[in-house]
Length: 86
Image (tube, rainbow, N blue to C red):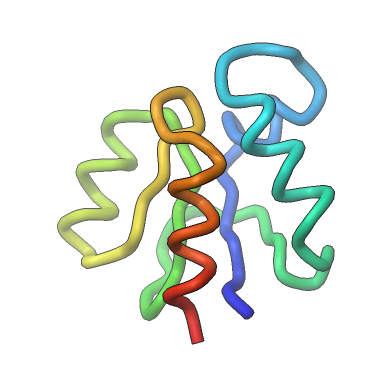
């Protein structure tokens, strides 16, 4: 199963209802807690960065990391990533 690395803006969506909160809540409901991690964003490999910060999104693409924006992507995009993960 994939491991998910969430930045502080994604974690805040867990406690403040805003665009993207449904994606974050879905993760916490459907992914084992040992597969959810807070990050400073300097990890590689087959990781997913969940962030709405455009700077982090650009950096993720440069680092060849998968990046999902909870404000524009939906749960279907998240499930597709999970199906592709080893």
